[in-house]
Length: 200
Image 1 (cartoon, rainbow, N blue to C red):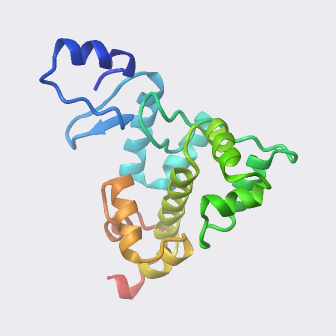
Image 2 (image 1 turned 90 degrees about the vertical axis):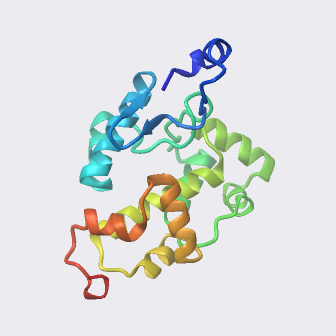
């Protein structure tokens, strides 16, 4: 793993090395690497999440005043705090979206909620958060799924519905892409509520 500033010279000097600019850290199971101070914190939170669950990782992130999980690569997607002023349309829309994750949340609907054109909303949202609206929504849904899997008896189908994933297949795909594990495996490892007999 190398810092994003070193990608170009490294690729020029060692063209045989495959570089992946879409990640903040890489976990090979026995080796975990990151580049830069911030991505090192991302990697540490990944370790906490992998061993103790999303709730513990979120608590550590709150204490450090950093995002629990950042989306995207080193240079392109640096997540920033979302404005929370009452007169800020992006902050209001983010708060509203978190209360409506179970519903369809297209970019057009989010833009209407913010009372902005779709193009203006996408630009303002990306400037405020460092990521695209659809990417942010997907990340929030995965986080909510983690919370529900850890702390409730809801069946996987119910978790998928509550988080806005249209099906268990969609939930599984998003979950595996974000956390490299399945919802069922995650629940077995991190469940804090009494197990549902149907899942045993």
